[in-house]
Image (tube, rainbow, N blue to C red):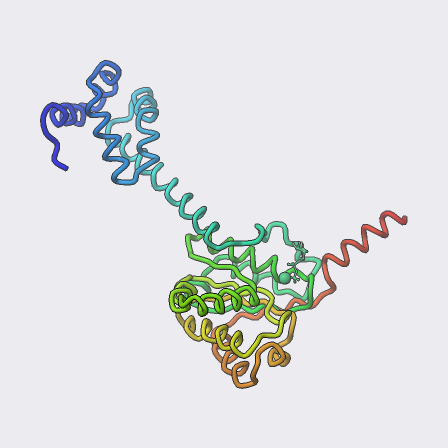
Length: 281
Ligand code: ADP
Ligand code: MG
């Protein structure tokens, strides 16, 4: 939109002499302000819009010139934009709960490669499109680590999707029945990090196995994945309907992979046992 009439003159005068603009602001015509607000909304600069008055007062007080004022506003906008992106990423990831590495007790599971977990939390493997497989019995913290790595990737601004294996198969079958399988497959292929939790708890049908395989096949070398399973690799054939599919899947996901073995006693079980001991003693 071209500026015209008094509003344009007012704005130019204001831009030419920002200090005068700030001092004149209360008494001056409302037109430039209305225009500015409108433009900031169109340009999607909500923080700029919210802050420009307050920062103008602060800058006058601190003797900061108009370049400093604008630098401050644009920086605030960028910080907020990053925060909004991370919030959006976390929402889109659909984590069932929020878990962080800070609350993970590495001492409880001495066999786990802590250095590797900390390295993975830097999310470089996501950029390199590598995979992570977490193996171990129930209750040892596989989901906890997977969620924490997912959150770390969101904080880097990466797109993440968290889903259990059976939920994903359910979603894929539903999408196929509703003739929107291609769209869902495209969505799943596009995320930077796909986390598939709990592979192995529920055996999959032939169709389920094939659909799950297709997802990993489409993501091969295009995106990173995290898989958790209570079963060692040798037993994965019991989950998938065929040995051929299991082999093909393992072949793809283990090509660029970090394996975290978490063999310990269930953390939950140990905690409830120590609580009982405390009660008894
Ligand atoms: P898994 O996925 O291996 O079955 P979870 O990650 O669901 O295990 O862990 C079960 C519960 O115990 C969760 O609430 C998790 O946060 C907690 N937990 C497991 N291991 C640890 C650990 N080493 N430190 C802190 N909390 C843990
Ligand atoms: Mg789990």
